[in-house]
Amino acid sequence: MDKKRYQCKNCGFEWHSPSKEYEKCPDCDSENIELITMEESFTEPIPQTGLGRRRGGQGARGMGGGPPRVCKCPQCGYESPKTPGVPCRDTKCPKCSIPLCGAD
Image (cartoon, rainbow, N blue to C red; front, side, top):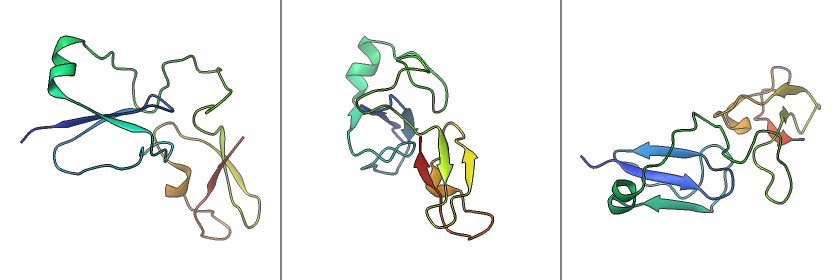
């Protein structure tokens, strides 16, 4: 099976998939992703930055400022620190049991 390599153009997150097609970044939910072809990956090596790490410096924020710093419950306001590589929506509020949202 061929592995497909994807890269998010907003947060820089990269991932591989042997079978699944992606339309959104699993880290920041952006639709601005690119399928990297095998020719591109052989001609120019892509540095491995780690799961959920951005290339442009951890503190850099601004237009398209990358992933949120905290995950917050839209109902009760509960907050927890953002875990790199894990979307906020995959974590449920311990009080309300609804998915958290990204917040700064």
